[in-house]
Image (cartoon, rainbow, N blue to C red; front, side):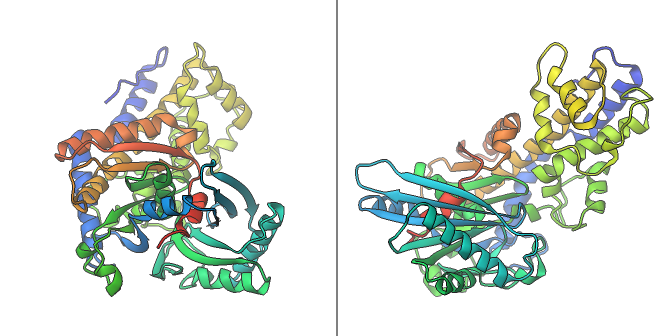
Length: 464
């Protein structure tokens, strides 16, 4: 465990910080156990969706050979559209990708906000169609083009272009459950007489893996570090006991699996939340669920830090006694993006002080600044190590699905890749270290940045 002893701090301040650091510390042995348990959950999820120690492991119609389909599309003039429906950020994103032999790819993107009064699946699909119309008019797209749709909700895919939002989805509005997104968007496009048809529907983590394959064709696993967390990998159909589709089951080509990694930790004997994690879970809208996600995802990391700071405040171990700390008492006011201050190496921690002044109207002493920076580092590094161990478990599963002994290539995308690089670096380092203890080839990582899934959705439309 790193030594977080603060220069100039009192014994009580350092003792409290040390106690927090020890509670957030994770050993290599614990990380190895976590990787094994993730692997077990993935294996069980291929048998049944109702395994108590299993992840849903939802099967997609996207196959590992889609990189070949993309290469074939690039040999002729081709165009496709991608639509991302993000229910967590209330945004829709559209992208077009155009291939011409011998010419660079042409990509256009546009972001739209989802209206606050959307209260039905039909209204959401109609709004998507309107935004598609705006996009193709803006970019003067005249020809008939395929549209790949991706959404941040779990899908039960019944065909390449048809997927219903899973009945057991815990994070979506009730009116979206069991809705066929492709069918709804397609019908809305038809009513507007647009030259666009839905040809693929995926979860965002699948489309992010497809986007990675455009640049790194051998990619066989993907991790999203966003408002939430998820991962995908390619699995051999013969190992998916619950697979009902005869065509997919008879295929020799690996198929994409949406693991729903956020749900890991429920019924876990390895995940060890602290009292602060339990507090956040208790106060959340989905208490008892998405346990692992609440330890590691962008949505929660800043709130964990805020709770630690308020505990320091309650113990009167941070900030002057007459400081107005009203803002700190409001939930989710310490944004995860603020945690980038842990990279501040200036002599007076200028960035930390500036953030506390601008965001919370707090004049922080040098000791206060050191404490806040240390808390950000403690929370961030624990999360990164846990994610790295989980990735090692996924790498083990992905390697078992392959016929060769080549290293598993993993893509990482999401907003945390840009707002917290030390987190990503620690995730990769941990995943490689744990993978070695599992006797695996060291995985290869490619960091793609914040948003690859809209382009990935467009590329999915080329899937055969």
